Length: 349
Image (tube, rainbow, N blue to C red; front, side, top):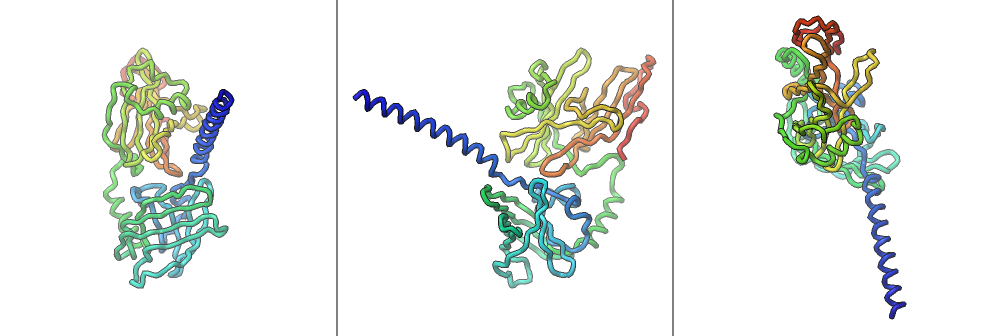
């Protein structure tokens, strides 16, 4: 009886160990099996302004966002060339495989594309389309990317099968006439949602700060934080970094609704030629949601440095801060001066 019980106990131990091992392998496989799809813009299309069959992520606009496309096929002579997509750092070419015809003068409701090596399959589904003076507008659709040993990656899209040149020229003239002065990136932020305790900040944000901004000590501050919605998928977080006698620094991070266990600390670029490295924290940060800018003031009442940063689209499904302007008053002369009136020492043109 004892031998039987010992064998059962050993078998149970081996079984539990096997399950734990399989769970670890499965978790690693989840990371390895994700398709690293990237949005793109002119970095791939290279300024192509003529006719095209193009699909972009539904919550983006290729006329406003630097990176919006998930698929782009030039149409130089009435027939679309193979399309471009971007996965990781690679721009891949995919060709259409006919699987049917709409027979209505509209786009086929289902279109199949494959890469030259056959490892990548792309299924385009058109849910809603209408005709316009530009061609055929895709009002709603979905593109699903399938690759060997990878999980399917679906993206909701809008698009155009046509020639946007004339319409784009008219839009550019209207936009130029109505454009406000000052910095503009096409981005704006939602109004801040304020938090009075770090206990209310998502754990991935705090982990990212601990790992990527090791100079920060948010736990030694009162914990007042803010969250700014960028769109339905991305949120910008402002978290206290270090509290000084007269100043306080902040750190900013991004979170994604479709990647809830992940967050990333953002870096602020140093002034070119100054020798100042990119850094995660900024002093006395003030956010302007309307222009997606962050102002940092470092100094006293009569001298110091004022920096202006703007949040902009970066390659892939992410964003970055760009340094727009640096003002500096080096002489502390006892004369109180508004930092906005400091001399300009750098301006991003």
